[in-house]
Image 1 (cartoon, rainbow, N blue to C red):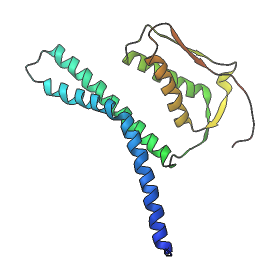
Image 2: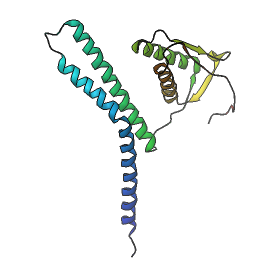
Image 3: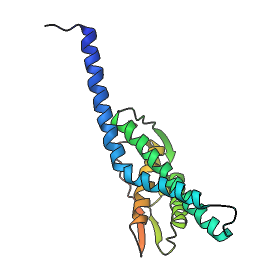
Image 4: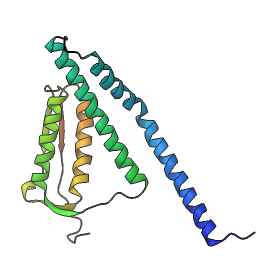
Length: 178
């Protein structure tokens, strides 16, 4: 029995769709419990709010709802990123950028995160190499920023006392842009 080129194409598309479905199922499975907890908090605490509640209680519920909503948003963004990576549709947009400005943005974001998670007792230290303010990089600054920020965010999450120190050393591998 021979198959026509069209039926072979359909078979290939179905196989690829099945692979993508299984990858998405795996990704959503990892986040299911985290999403369920945040959704429960948003729905549950919003249900408890009413006009007769004391202002302190309303404020506390509002903070919990906001925190859970932000957590859900982060999960959805992570799922989208993982989906793009799994489907090989993640686009890398390289550009030349000033590293000092890049690091300043990350430092500002991690300090804001530190306040948000109420870990003021943790000292966050940046240890750059000499002349880091003169360094330019050629990379996808948005994705690199996201990676470094998530690493620091996890360090903050799992550090209960002391300090978090991050930095880099300069090593020139190739002077030609990729």
